[in-house]
Image (cartoon, helix red, strand yellow):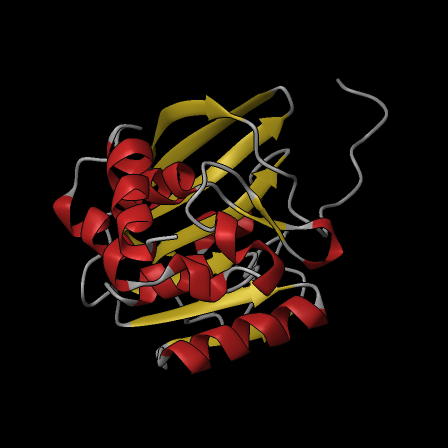
Length: 219
């Protein structure tokens, strides 16, 4: 397989054709080698339009989905970013190429170790991989705010704790809802108490681990 040809085909036929137009975002997929973050058994499929399986039933998002999330987040060089759901570390690696600092949270110890190894081996050192359950928010100090928050799994509802962690003009990209009615949303902080929400597209994304059980009763 011609790896570089496969990479360009992925960028052009999946990511760009799937609605990602930012040259800066498209360039990230040339710089951050997706096959490096895919498990060895699936490296030949790293450029396919599919979710790559990981440990504990988790997966890497499709290339198109990764690109759409990155474009919506509109990362800037000075941004501090929080990601929930590290997986293999690939999304954190993409974000880190454009940001000042990334904190990524993983609930599964084996995946946390995998993400750390992949990031270190690839030479990315502005990412802190934390072990914990971030599904209800991530408390790392009352004075810690983030310019961008990315939630790499679907949530039945968005906990207010995430909104409290957004800094001025902060952007949050999340998948909200339950299958088959999941919507990718961009939430932007406009003031202390005002947020704008934009529905980007409808999709299917695996639920984030660690969420509170859904209620049997709805009011």
